Image 1 (cartoon, rainbow, N blue to C red):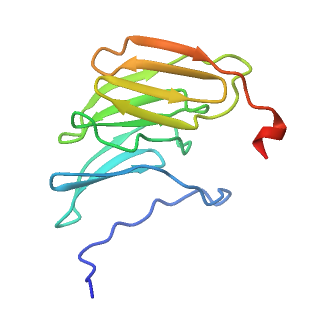
Image 2: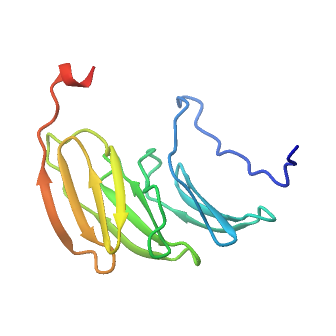
Length: 153
């Protein structure tokens, strides 16, 4: 049988908060990286010691990319998950922080985020922007029609 070598305490939620999922966990080198409600942390796999923590400006449980690309992790933040922070995994330094405009009718939070090469793409029911990770410049943006209520069931 396996043996637990260390544990990390879960974040405390406000008393009025529902149980929520906070997606995003990655492994690289000697660390495990985890998306937390207000940012991301890295802990040493052997000792459990926290290596770094990067806060985000909001505690909305937004998405995170499923993978580490070029030693970077991508974590969304914001009321509408309309911001992204790209973190250098080995050091915990913020490599890029980007907020993008959402339309007044774009009220849904992000449903996905992905990174590949030097690109990061975020998808909502309304807008899908893509940015260069290295310089933060927008690559493209697609306006998507929101699915009908029948399609959401």
